[in-house]
Length: 125
Image (cartoon, rainbow, N blue to C red; front, side, top):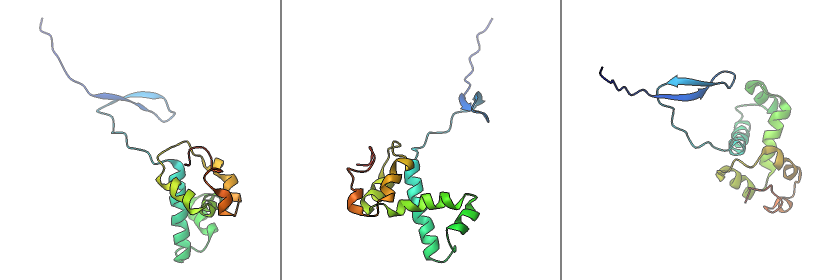
């Protein structure tokens, strides 16, 4: 009897309900994920530009187009009230430890000096 060798590529992925599934072929290469807070900060900057250029009228129109509530758009846009140094840090950060929720206290503080990096959540330094 002859032994036959065969090379088969497969990987384990997630199904519709997050169930593990064996799939044919090699897995897709893992990309460096941009932290959620960096994506939200960039989105706020983009929305602000759309409003300034007159491409959208207001937060309500952005909410309608995006299928989210006006309150959610306001939460994202409030990131623009952070001190420029904190905004820059969020955009350049590669850490996923910073949550939007943890920044909300700083967002409510209008004075940028009070928003200094020592008052920012852990991970924003």
